[in-house]
Image 1 (cartoon, helix red, strand yellow):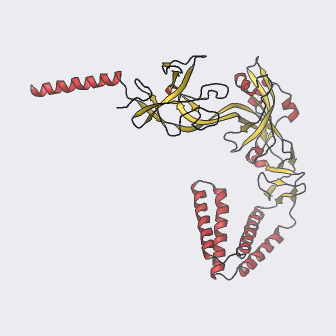
Image 2 (cartoon, rainbow, N blue to C red):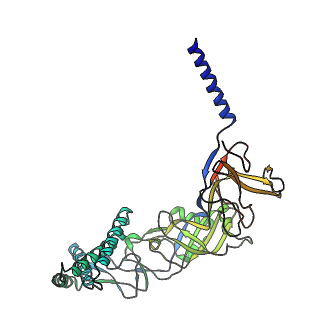
Image 3 (tube, rainbow, N blue to C red):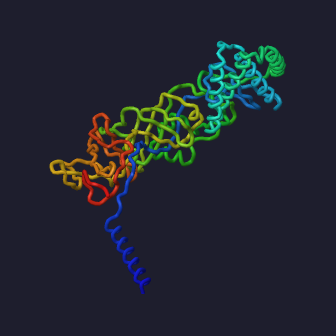
Length: 422
């Protein structure tokens, strides 16, 4: 009987505890961390460049890098008659790089071993970091920096007198290869600009003028059927101007964000990027915005005066137009409370009501009310799902009392400033 009584008592206590927790749920906390929210418009469209096709066909060996700026008449590629010539060109390029590295290695301007050791160690760390992060293009230059530091250390310590014999042997081999490759047909640049290979680039199926003459519905139809195609039958193209345009289309509701208060295109600088296509984010300005209520679409044109490597190969591409960025403390919207300014009594926020917005934060075992900026023209409401962005204490023109890493009480019972937590 005693055992049964104990079990019944334990059950009653457990049930009572559960009822207590339901009626008095525990306080929930979150740490105030910094976050950035972008106001952006997603669109689809085409990139419009001033470009010139570079004639050329056959087995091409390119002598300039993708996106490299070239002058009119510069040799872009050579035409091989067999694949072995491609291997010879690669070997010749490697020999020239080795010769340059060895010549630089002999130019030792210091006899301080400590400096050379530090230079070599730094190069090793940079190389390992690039490999760890998957930045293999950077790893190649880091490897060269390490070899240069090591060679200079050998010269300084006397482990290598100089590299004259090695340089002579490499030059002899390089001279033989140059003789074999001399006289090959060459592809030259028809103008000055940035070169893009045909194998990596696209061409638009309609002219720039024809695309710019399309309305929102016409542009949408062109994009659906495909506004670009592979660039074939040539060596590549030269982007001849610094300025280019993005002609895009988006839902009319989104397009309203591109307009100013007077209904004209939004003034000031915006940013554009091409997710999954290019890592670059470039600045530009809106020159045209048209809302077509009948089709439910908005058409716009953005001008950009900066070029970046990856985007030169694009034709049709989805884009994000970034209108603004807001950085601040990211807190839950339901953690915000409103106190009447005269009495400190908590109220529901109403437009025109004299209240102070803020959050309750935990400092040790005390609850403190930290005010935040009221929503107004100077401090617009910026949402990020269930969260809002508020400015931290010390921000210019802000009355915020909230700091980075403060412990926010998201929910709790009978909260008030100065409450002692159990």
